[in-house]
Length: 57
Image (cartoon, rainbow, N blue to C red):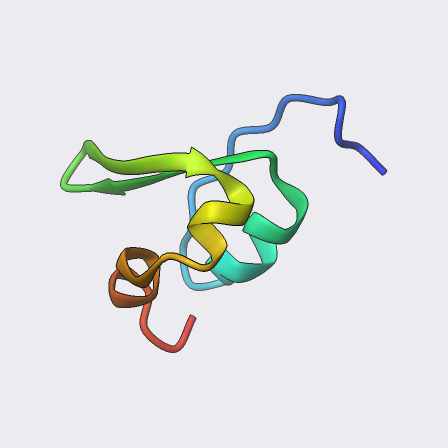
């Protein structure tokens, strides 16, 4: 619906990374203020690294 509107979202406890990656084009994983992983949302959605970073998310 709003895919053409740029949005920046930090993930806290209120939204799961999976939900955000389902509506995003790209994603970035930050740890301790540094980007540790980035890529197309579809690739990140199936990434083992994302699953480890956000267990149960």
